[in-house]
Image (cartoon, rainbow, N blue to C red; front, side):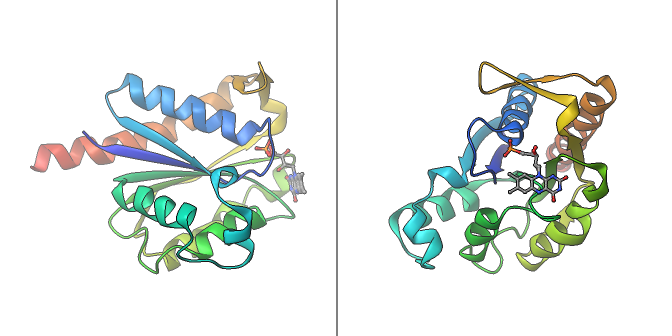
Amino acid sequence: MAHILTIGGSPSTPSRSAGVLEHARAYLNERGLQTSNLSVRDLDSEELLCGKFNGPTMLKAKEIVASADGIIIGTPVYKAAYTGVLKAFLDLLPQSALANKAVLPVATGGTLAHMLAIDYALKPVLSNLGATHVLTGVYLLDQHLELTNDQDIWFTSHEAEERLTAGLDSLIEVFANRSERV
Ligand SMILES: Cc1cc2nc3c(=O)[nH]c(=O)nc-3n(C[C@H](O)[C@H](O)[C@H](O)COP(=O)(O)O)c2cc1C
């Protein structure tokens, strides 16, 4: 069974992007994929800020990333790009950490003006980490995402939910095709 890891890039709690990732995991679980989550908030801040590549939480995080077949990387847009703390984490990953993994980028933002942040800011970094199979990213606006119970996400736009579903289905299809070939 394919294992999909969601990587959450928001330093905040509650977090819309974390809620979107939780929604994504539930959707994938219902369709037979195994999922787990890694948030930048789980990592040790000193390891991140001081570039401790082999700190205990980084070593564990690197193992988790290595064991995933696919990755959904979810981040809020900060200053027209992804978050700094997500970059601090990605900087500590090995050069080919994302090789042979399907990657679906997802971003939440306050304005449509930054919907290309996935393409201009995040995708080049994913490529640098060896990702060759990056799926079409999903950009979601805050106004279409309502946080309930401090963590669950409620879509106030059917169109936005459909775009996320299409992204998740494209990820599921990657693994359906792989198992057909085995
Ligand atoms: C420090 C900061 C910078 C932000 N910069 C942008 C931005 O440049 N463009 C944008 O569309 N939204 C921006 N936002 C809004 C967030 O991207 C948006 O609210 C996002 O959904 C928050 O996700 P989270 O709840 O998972 O942290 C910013 C928010 C913060 C806190």
